[in-house]
Length: 574
Image (cartoon, rainbow, N blue to C red; front, side):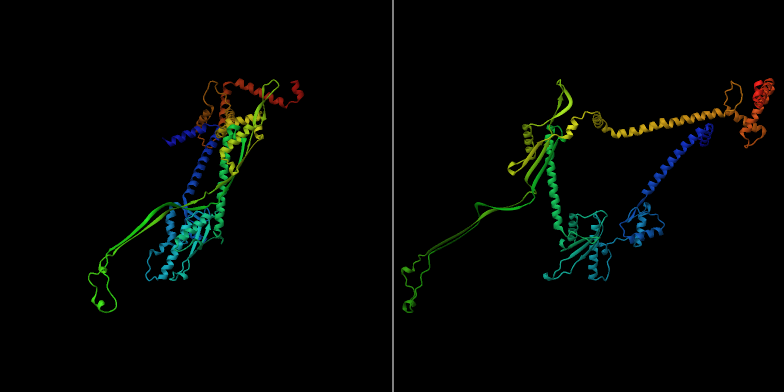
């Protein structure tokens, strides 16, 4: 495609347009170019904005000043979209981080166990203990800083030396200072969580010895018992409210089909709970005895040795036992049995905990609307007007029974249900509302409201269509009429042949070029001079061809000019 030829064709087409058409085309092209430039600038600004990435955040003011000073020294553009956040072009983020880190700028406020990455020769036990304490404090601070509500934290641990004597031992303690994110606060659960985290990280450290304060010096978590009670109270009230709403919804769901809609039933339920929880421990014994152990011992001895004869020293005692005596016979027999049996009684120990909430009493108040029937005229035909008809006693009793069964009413517990029948004013107005505005409102709510989003776009298109018909189209037609008038007005007043169909403008341009070529006139030649010369040449030819008619025309012109200078009387006589 020849670009030069295309430009030449467009130039020729543009030169043939009228002045008004040229204005319209120029304005349109300028508007399109301006819109494209706007899109390019907008997208480029958005891309430039997305080309920036966070370099550092949550820095102290001193570290932020050092980082900015280094960026200005390196001629790197930066932005500060919000407090403690510095952004630079994303293709320079990692390089600049390493550069700033090598200079020791914007270091973390705490150090961890990386202190032990390098071994120091000649370090004493005291140095190692101090490094361990710093590392432990830094690691705990980093862990707490990772929590969402906390911006920065600082931890100091007091770890006493171990003693061989129990009476002289001192429990370790810890103090934690936290700086919270703006518009954030710590709940009682979060405070207990931080204390438990610190206590679990240090040996022999109890939760009671961990003190937590915020950046304003206010102690956090001192009233743990009160906070726990408050949380428990809130939880109890929430449970009570939830259960009451459930029972109210049950009543409305049961009665609404019978009454005629949810807007014609009002139910309020109050439940009294006993939130005191009791723990029970019970022991039960089995009356059936069970043998646990049994032990049996048995001894048996038969006969005995002869008795030894003794007495006063003398012949008999010296001689010894005499053979053949009855006392020398073996007649002893000994038996012994011992049995021990141990019995065990089986025992069962059970522990139970009471419910979170025990219902003490339920009271419910239910208000229902009545019925409505059409009012009949004198002839007995129903009209559009409605009248209220209250419910009878049997219907109220049926409603009360339904309510009792739906929410579990126990009369022995002291539960009460009250059902009343009243005329609802809103229902009365809705039933008797047959006016045209209300019917229109119902029609709109039923058929048009679901298509509200579609109507928005239709409305915008309608506005654009009306603007086109009432503003743009008439303006374009007017501009075309003006262009046509200019064309008619700019046509040269030349009496050329009637059957000549050549464009007058092109003929003028051709005559102009021909005259310039013949006379050697440059670009400074004026079109008005050309027209004047053409008219003179045309008049000269006409004078030579029809001298009589020209003479008559001149005579008429002279007479009209003389009559203009005559007095009215002379003009009347003449």
